[in-house]
Length: 489
Image 1 (cartoon, rainbow, N blue to C red):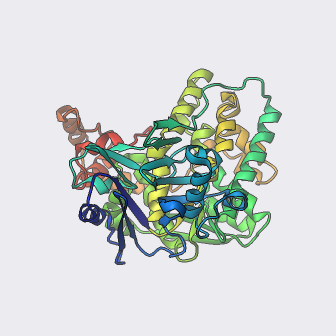
Image 2: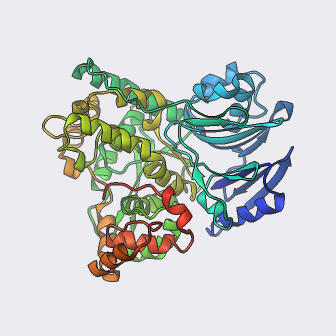
Image 3: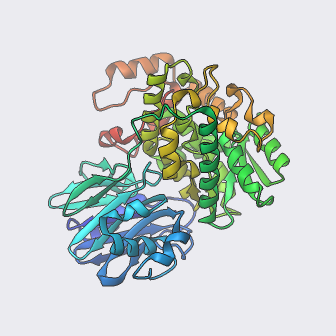
């Protein structure tokens, strides 16, 4: 895991060092801290158990410095054309040299997930990837700025904290600019066959380019159709890929994943966790996640144990995040008429940065694993967002229609055509969390809280969400409530 802080004309090394202490994660390993000052800008990083060949703070030519988090999936094609040459083989050095070459337009050339701040002379430049797969927060402090990759960095300050918007950059002399936006318009001229072919080509390209960015990456095989598609695409070239699934001991969790892994011939690992293991780690999971949203936490619990095991054999994992949002995978979307459905899919996609992308990043990073999210690649997001709603949720109510049809010849019918109700993951873990919360809180507890809460307190919608919120608020005050994304319960 690594986190960083960048203070532009606003804090001393001692103050940044203290903020790094708030990020230190108790995980059995001592963190390594680094704090340096470059012409009035203080960079601080905290690393726990991560490879030294992926630096997060890098100096470049001309006195420039970058604080970087992420993975650039088109680095192999970019690197030969960048001048001056990057100072090392890291993605951080590549981005810094690209900035020197293309200035504020550098984000237009990047694919992948990233968050970074660059200091160059008296100027600074900050940017975040199109959908916000990597986190970035900021606060204005007097005449300066404070940036950090986790909310926890600000808990011991009184600064008003905001989330840096996805698909945007900020340059000190021109302010904030948006370089990517989820399209508003739908291409009604595309027919079903064209849509299916577009999805097949773009998803395949995205999976291969994402996997290429990190050798020996595994696949998080949750059993959902999108995770099976990722595994199937990679298995066409390499049957010995590693896949991982997780479930509650004694439940049916992971049955589809194990069946698909056997059919593909992957090196599969299924992790079983007990109820007691989940309860013992729940506080750690919620505070690492920095969210109390019930659906997000429920999935994060499964992710936490899967990534803990995966970290023993791989440093990166491909995951299907964003497919549900892009292709209308949620059951509550099915009854919606086309215009409302398109608007809701767009809203869900734009909200990913503070919901499920935040979840998969936090749960992988805490175990020193890099999350790779092929469904977040820019061309794929742009193209799928413009497909008509009935090619995402069909007229007969089938979700992810174009995605299923695009890979109907790659996957067996019992995966591609199975009922939507079976396209779920870790239901045993989710049911266990709900059952436990029933023993802690009553309906009256939830009702009394919601009736008496102040405007700055969040609405609580379920007993397990109350459980997560009680943990969350031991670390975070009401300033941070607006930063917590809320999903459909």
